[in-house]
Image 1: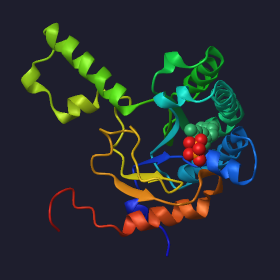
Image 2 (image 1 turned 120 degrees about the vertical axis):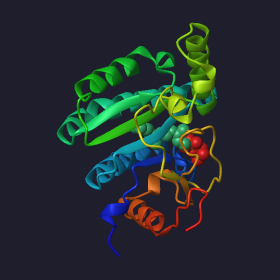
Image 3 (image 1 turned 120 degrees about the horizontal axis):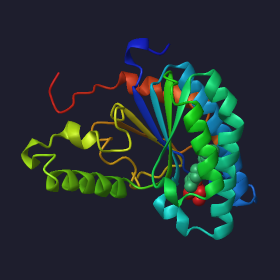
Length: 238
Ligand code: FPP
């Protein structure tokens, strides 16, 4: 069965989980698992682009991940920087716009600079948006939105009764993008873990036992096929 071009998800979000367990099974260092995971990120980004998915959001580092051992945090930051630097050309060539979502200021300057430079050079690309969620937490995102709206109301620029879901969406990091159609989590965990809580209201959820470093283009495509076979009712009846 081929993919139905009329039912391509407009926004896919992925919780890339299981790098540590993948490494442990092979008696490797956790960073080796993240490194292998980075290769899978490359593959999935290219596949999503080829399939004309307008928005792909990857959970690369959560606000809670700062609590991991220092060596793992710095190893992950090093990999992120390397990813951004080495993928720069491919992103430019393939029309991908890179966008970091989360607490940008908390990232180390070397990672921020690399991200900023690629975000700037790809800012006019329009084939696909690649959101990298870094130091990201959905509750913090919602709190920030509430603060912005409260300030606007206090200044007389916003009538509280006029607040709509669209206005809320316009104050999230994903402003201007579609809500998530398909959320994938690898490694068998069945949790949302504070990821895109507002944007997944009507997302189809897909959990796979595959550890992220073992995830493949074939499995990604088969999950999209599964998504295309689902009956999305958005609370109505068909
Ligand atoms: C979860 O696995 C994964 C992460 C915390 C980081 C995700 C990072 C990558 C896929 C590599 C680098 C990313 C980019 C965008 C270049 P885990 O460590 O929680 O695994 P475990 O649950 O098995 O311990």
